[in-house]
Image 1 (tube, each protein chain N blue to C red):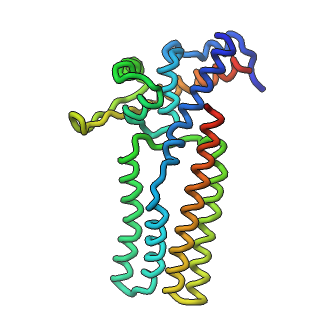
Image 2 (image 1 turned 45 degrees about the vertical axis):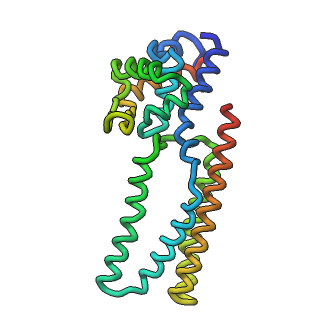
Image 3 (image 1 turned 90 degrees about the vertical axis):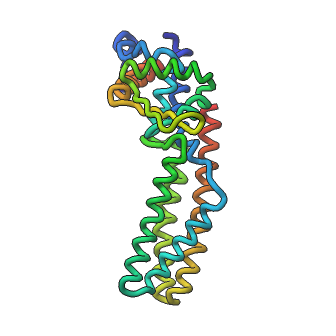
Length: 148
Length: 101
């Protein structure tokens, strides 16, 4: 096999392996808002007592699990394995942003109370989800350009 | 250290995966939990019959499994790589990488 042919085939391999990750970049405008509402409600649920608190916690944990299950069904392909290297930036952003939002929620909760914490957490989550989504889309575009 | 692009590298090449379309199908499945027929057809830019033919060859070799759900227009067909298919794909991929040096 000639090296030019091998190079072409290897490019096809890279395109194929990246395909599911690039498909994952398609996002919906409402997602950050829904994530924000969910996070705000989660903080608000801490103000409840007894059975109401347990029920709210169960519902709030079940909701994202159901969302992920539905998302897997809906998509034509779901990524696994090694992601294209360009996507590491957005993945690290998610790793940093998630605990930052949780820390903000905790600090505002302690200093200003549940309602303000819920509002601050909701807004921070919307911003974080939007930032992550945009970074992922930009990174995915870089992958497309490299493999074009 | 990479091995020279000699017979040892060629030994890893799988005749079934020498066909670019079949190799591309396995590459998509290697990066996915599963992939639907429509997604593969779009990615490979092939006709329904061509994709069916290539997938059937991989299925016959035990490299992938086919799942069908529903019937008619609302039904869907999805593919998933088997352990044997992934092993053959990894060997083929490594052989190509060695050929490139």
